[in-house]
Length: 206
Image (cartoon, rainbow, N blue to C red; front, side, top):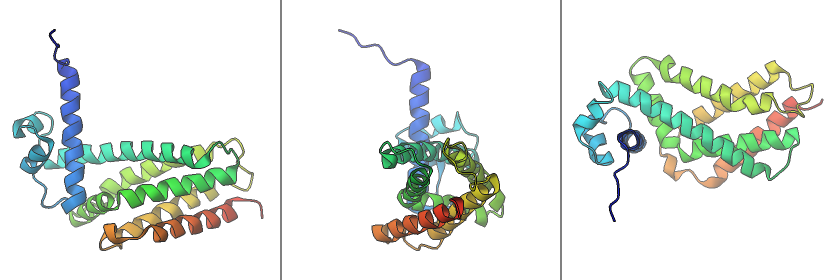
């Protein structure tokens, strides 16, 4: 019995996925500065030329890897938020689940987020990745904005402030952790709990 090879388009897509995953692994481990195309190729188990057929240089590769991370992160938040809700539909429960899901995302990917953020600052173009992060956070908040049981007190401006508070707090937490792997679970859990209480109090009825 013979087995046909996967179509070229499918193989190319799989190769791209490996390249982007390898890039993000290396950024998570060592940051952006020491990353090389050769190192990515070795980690992804592809030829260096395979990377250059898709990306002209390291910066193009990093931009694509960052976009992939945002896509992956958004899917993780959606899945974990649903899991945390456990069928509940109240607005307060949704806010709690949202904060927990986003906080856990930052906890899991602290090294990667820090690596990209610091590289952006070092290159003197802090707005570049930050703008993408801002758009991603806005998209993540849309289910809160359009929640069917959203109370009248949760105005658009209140939710915008809530979004910025969560984003700024978690970004500060990651950037000011010298070794993300040493952060114990309770610290992140406590942060999520405190953010949830604060935000529910702010968005809910007086």
